[in-house]
Image (cartoon, rainbow, N blue to C red; front, side, top):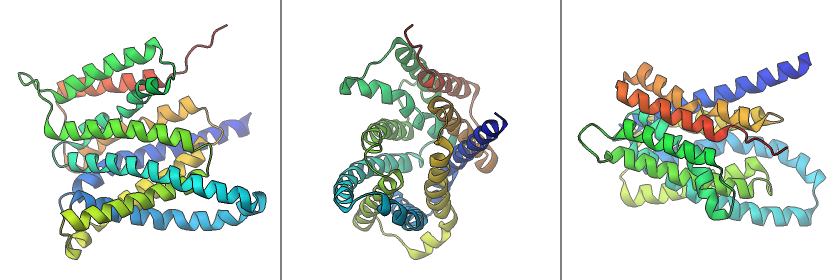
Length: 302
């Protein structure tokens, strides 16, 4: 029992560290945009993420080859490529919307609006004929009210430019989660992540060359945010999530990871001196309540 408790504590700490890394990544993205364009940041970030994940794949791949036959591997490789590209396109679209939106909104607001994908996933699941209970719709109502308080200023019933981009990012992230949910049981999770990072890097590089004029000096000036977002947020954060979720209750894991939105507010306050009004904090509280509600386990019929 003690060993189990220690193991659960260790996994919880790893998941909390992942949430902390991701929460502070909003600061890195915001600061990075002061020096480079969104597609330059995305391209550089994902190249670094690949450099972090590839050694892990090389080390573990030999062990997997001994267990799986060559014919099975070929099938896995084809499915891995299809799944990785689909996930990568969604992830790129979400990352681009988020990166552009960070230019026009605060770190804290971006963190909470992005976290709305946790509420949107079960809603989008309706189109895949997945059951959606009353609790989900209550969460949608809370999230909508929270977004209203967070994004709509008094006397102005329009979403701000940055908030629209981030909300679009949350919607695409929800689609990304559904793609991952479909492909991850069929292929290796780390390799799937690696292919999607590669897709991200290629798309980011193409649009960087077409739409931006990256200067090497600017990239050098933004090296710390880029390295943090690539190595820590994508590489280390993802690794902590995989290890932390092994054998852990999925509800408990998702609740810990959802603290990312709260940490983003603290990170913006500590590092960028960004503050939220009482109205915006109330919106954050409602949004976080919706995130928690949608992840609680449903009662099983007796």
